[in-house]
Amino acid sequence: MPTALACPDCGRSYEDRWRCECGAPLEFADEPRPDGPAPDPASVDGRRGLWAFEDFVPIAPRVTLGEGMTPLVDAPAWDASFKLEYVFPTGSFKDRGATTTLSRAVELGAEKVIEDSSGNAGAAIAAYAARAGLDADVYVPASAKASKLRAIERAGATPVRVDGSREDVTDACVEAVRAGDGWYASHAWNPAFLAGTATVAHEIARERDWSVPDAVVAPLGHGTLFLGAYRGFRALLDAGWTDGMPRLLGAQAAGYAPIAAELHGSEDAAGNNDVADGVRIRAPVREAEIREAITATDGDAIAVGSDATKRELDRLHHRGFYVEPTCAVAPAALREYRERGVVDADDDVVVPLTGSGLKG
Image (cartoon, rainbow, N blue to C red; front, side, top):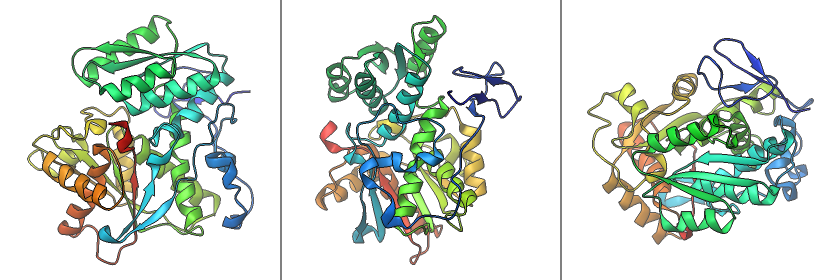
């Protein structure tokens, strides 16, 4: 039986719903934890991908393309390790959430799913919907890149172009959900998506023999990877598999940086970043949770502008990391965090690289 949902704000519970009646995002009523000590890292079956950690996931693996177990490699030029999330089946970390979200949709008997996305999440949901044999509509900004629209269309999903802001796209999608046009496979609202992105933490810890880094620097828009990492590392700590939490350091796009503005003032977050389109989010759905994760881990969030993003993208490409522009905000932020003294020279840092440059 599918795991029920509960509202952390008002306490209501549901078999299924995209949002609580009080307006808050919902969570799984039960979050499983494995019994016993952490296994030998070498015994974790990499052939199962991220589903090797299904004891932490409140969903059965019904829709999968073998996603997960992405490489963790040294990046000496940054004095860090990079988690290569861009080698997923659809070229971005969003496949982590797509496999769990579509598995949840199948558990609930959905026939059609609806998503709103600036690109990568839409491509992932479209691909996994195709794998599940479900119809899919993906609401996208009218300005979405042609390469990402092609990925959605070639998977058999229907892109619905919406003029206006990213928020206008979400509003149009929500209206379709309310009209009963399909099941909302939202990467921002659906807790099933975060159950998938949490496995990035499990993989990082496993690749480090169950030790955690001093810090993880990640792009921060709606926070699906940022919050996934927080939940995943917290789950490992709760299960007794690790003995600490990394500091979570976010990289927002200048001009779209509400968390950085709150922490450091609007002037620090001002400017514009027209390069990192994947994190141009002015009102994250789970903003309160992002702030809580930052507070709980002694973390931070800063804004990165276009020029710094472009410079870092060139550096990445010149060293063999062929990623899309949004990926560059996190290594650029790492440079800034070091200059500000937030990250020390001897800190052990992991940076996820989230999307492939082959997507255009």
